[in-house]
Length: 280
Image 1: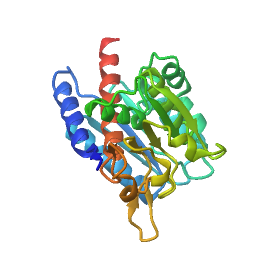
Image 2: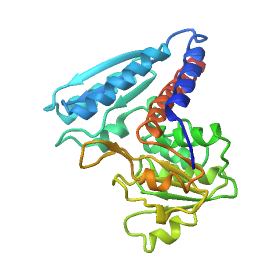
Image 3: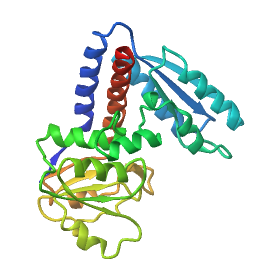
Image 4: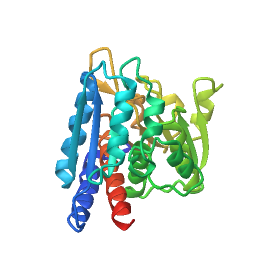
């Protein structure tokens, strides 16, 4: 039976570390959180991030904008926040309501305040191995592996999903940790044959129970990044947890696995941003 990786406990440990570091700074770091529209899921995510800020002693600057906010008005706000010395990080909650275009909004955020690590500059730095920030979800996965003494070095690592937010940066971080990485996606043929070779399998597809026990080799480390709801409305991941748990050596549950770590690593990125600004 696999060891369950406790993301909730580790996230509390990371936030405790950030809170202790914040107390040593000459001023409190600040995070501007921009939410456009009234999407219920986005509201939940934003409230969670603001609660994390309070827990870590970080100032939170909320900006709630109506769904009919224009592209120009949103860009003007980003430029204002770029110039605000009390703001160390800017987070624009995605997805944006139509017809707003997220790409120019992300590009407008100052790279030194891009604590989500979505800006092309930070993506480039990440991929050449000299990151300023690391994307929160992949960074959270790497922190979990370190905490449980799981080294990707010399291991076969398979990542399911090629999104810019999780899949691609996850593959980059595993490669930089000396893993041998295969990045799979919807066009990958004979997928199960590839996943059965994985010592470390990371799934970020967004389809409930798409990773079955027959796709996992005995003793694999299985990291489930996805957050889905099944037909009964219950939260679940990509992995058929009950079937895969007996085969794996380590496994993340959903909920309580990667999700809390994503938020904790945002706090870590914000601490990095504040330190960089104070040193500038």
